[in-house]
Amino acid sequence: MAYEWIIDALEETWTSIDRLLRPEPLSAYDAPTPCPGWSVRDVVSHLLGFEMMLRGAPVPTFEGEWPTYVHNPIGEFNEAFVQRYRSEPGLTVLDLFREQCAASLSALRALSDQEWERVGWSPEGERPYHRFQETRVLDSWIHLQDIRDALLQPEDDHGPGEEIVLNRFESSLPYVVGKRMRAPDGTLVRINLSGRLARSTLIGVVNGRAMSVPSSDAAPDLEITTPVALFWRRAAGRISADAFLAASATDVRGDRELASAFASGLKIMI
Image (cartoon, rainbow, N blue to C red; front, side, top):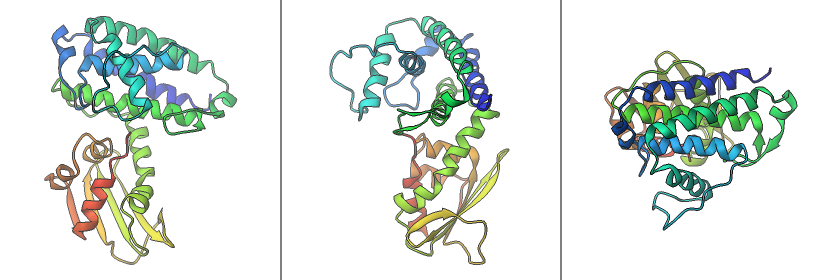
């Protein structure tokens, strides 16, 4: 199968969530996460509900006023599922999550290559189905880290999930430099990431368009060196722009205004 690696990443990430939470006391499900207004139970309910919706389940009716952190239709149906399961015991929600993940993985393994290529709805707009499922990996893997942080059990989760997340965020860097920063022509920005998936990316702005460039003899206007974990946390909106730049492990060289604009624009996740 052409996209088996996406299924493997989902299975590994979902299994890690189940394995992490299974031995925890019921009180752990009430721990607040970095997601505004969401506990550990709420994060699992969101992942459960989204997979249910993709398999054809109706979105529950939301009762009351939308929380202030809900800004769009995607946030609304996420919150509707979260509210639906908020009164359920955490272990019950986890059991439902495990069952739904098994059903989702089975359905994905039954898809043909043509179905993986079919363009349709996704939170990012019309995209091929394989791109949509990459986004499911991104969302699920980041939420695994949210749960780890809530339980004070941070850990480096290597494997296909981490690689997909980092590749997706790295591929967004031209957008960050060109659209978010509005960097002028001739600007060069180098981002160096340290760690197991270390890499260095050079972004240049040419004729109003930012793009990856293989090399340049010119010194970059901005060079930021930071660990992979700090990079994805900022890209996911889990730490602020100021915290990203001020971290002792982040080294900033060059234009400070560009650095501030880059860090502010680096928040990529919806």
